[in-house]
Image 1 (cartoon, rainbow, N blue to C red):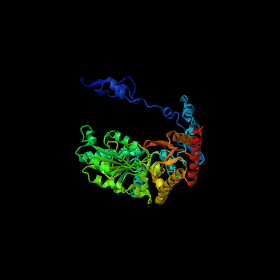
Image 2 (cartoon, rainbow, N blue to C red; image 1 turned 60 degrees about the vertical axis):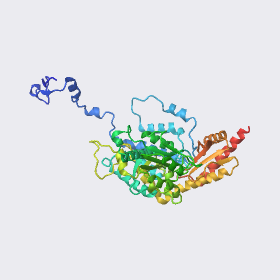
Image 3 (cartoon, rainbow, N blue to C red; image 1 turned 90 degrees about the vertical axis):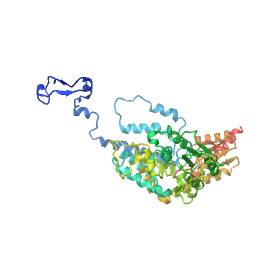
Image 4 (cartoon, rainbow, N blue to C red; image 1 turned 90 degrees about the horizontal axis):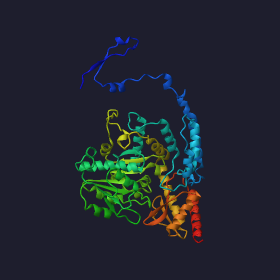
Length: 522
């Protein structure tokens, strides 16, 4: 390599001195590299400020006030709003939104008004009192208000250092939840995007721990060559859980599928028999709240057996059913959660917080942090402090704890229990009323908030009734197939659903059934 060379200074003045008075620069860097590293000329103040308002933060008021007005009008319309979206919305909205992107800025208030007007026909009244689809709850007033503040505060919440407020509220809300739901006191809580990422978080911790016990460092060495992990789950495992398994490399088709009973509950004897033929690391997955029937796997019967295995991890997927543990009346359905190694749920489903609000509960904090932690010079850890990113996959992330904190405080223990019990009572009431009509059959034991309804003992009639109900718009309920039979699935999860809403919904369903029956007769 050629040695260092002196480069003559150009014939110009530098800092007011003649060029010849400036020492020559000595460098071994190539001319091309020097060109890239040369400092650019400082832009003028006018260039830097071009397009910036004189008082930029005063620009928030008008668009936020208009957005609040639009939001309140929408929320106040929910009790009487057509629950489903306009059927033409899927084709119409892209046409309304599609336009060439303008060269010049547009007024923020106008952007908000036009956006809201364009998408409004495609909105579904999911927060309303008669939305019974996909196990989706509403949004409590305090939780929604807190969520607005989350966006305004705009806190990136990976660590305590940049946002001690976000870290503190997650810590407090997590401690409340651990005690409220009956987990072991040492359980840690990660605030994830939803039940799927909460399951993913728990599975990552489980994978770490069972392989660590087997002498394998999966974070350092990956899965290639690792001891095989046996995953035991019921035949009716939730797709969210399957997706989480896939993402941690355990595979959708691997493991053991344990037979379930007629309500979708895992058979404890089947699990014992299946695992008796295995060796090595084991992860057992239970379901608290079957997505169709609402049934619970027998945790109290299975947990002692799993605890007796030499290297096992017990996880419960409780996306909505886990919240039964907050009710003294329903707690026995869930079982003793202090016996589990991890659990996942979604606060939006039954705590009625805004999205996103997944919760991952992991008893072994060291396993969770080993699976999730990462280090870098610009990410200074503070010994003894809780950094939220060490409990979930994301680093840059929304400050999710504020909505959960506000929801819990606004409800209190009694209010949360009453909300959950009220929804279960609505589900039982609707099932009873519908079953009284000849030609309508309830397929499941209504133990929680799920009702499976079959019409005319016929898939075609059932689909016809579901379509008519969705078109009518009094309520919204979707369809499913359970044990080979088509059914309407009613999921009651909202805080605002009343007996009057239940009665109104039943009448609409019966009306749709009568219409479908009459149409089939010609």
